[in-house]
Image (tube, rainbow, N blue to C red; front, side, top):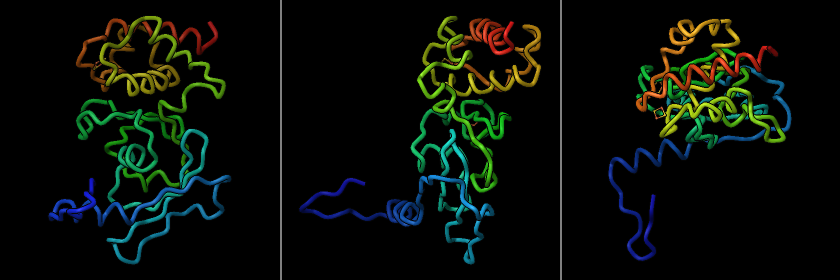
Amino acid sequence: MVSHANSGPRWSRRNFLATSVVSTMSVTLLDHPPADAAPASAANPRDPIVTNTTINGRHYRMAIDVRTTLLDALREHVGLTGSKKGCDHGQCGACTVLVDGRRILSCLTLAASTEGKNITTIEGLAQADGKLHPMQQAFIDHDAFQCGYCTPGQILSAVACVAEGHAESEAAIREYMSGNLCRCAAYPNIVDAIKQAKNKMEGA
Ligand code: FES
Ligand code: FES
C-alpha cells in the first residue's frame, strides 16, 4: 500500500482486509530442519498455521493463512516468483513445481499439505555453481519458448516426465506433457528439447 506523508492512508474495505490478512503471515528461513515437523493447528480457524517445508534445499517455517495455496506461499511469502499463475484453476500447468520429485499443480495444492516435504521450483533446478539443469539447457538450445510465461512449469513438468519414464517417444512426450499449455505454441521445440535432455539425463 502506498501512503502519503500528508494525507495518511486511505482506508477501504478492500485494503483493510488485505492488510489484516498479510500482517498475520510470516516466513522464517532456518539453518536446519525443525525438530517439530507437524504443522501447528490454529485454535481459531482464522489464525495463521505454522508449517515447515524445504524449498530448493533451504528450510522455511511459514506462518500462513490455512487457505494459502502453495503457489501463493511461494510467490507472495517466500518471494520465489518463477512459478507462474496462469489460470489459478488447474488448467494450464504454469504453476507446476516438484514436491518430493513429483510434479504437482501448486495452484491447487494447499501450502499446509506440504509440511515436511521437499519442494523444487525453477529457481532451485540449476546447480549451486550456476550450471543449468540439462532440461533448462535443452530449452535454450531448441528455442523452446517465446514469451516464456509457461516455461518454468514446462521445464519442471518435463524433468518429471523423463523421470517417470514417459518420454520414450514423441507421442508419449506430447501425451504426458499435455497438462502444460503454451499460448505461444512452442510445442514442437519443447518436444525436441525434452528428447535432448532425456538423453543427457539418462547418460545416453
Ligand atoms: S496456474 Fe495452476 S494450472 Fe494454471
Ligand atoms: S512460451 Fe509463451 S506461453 Fe509458452
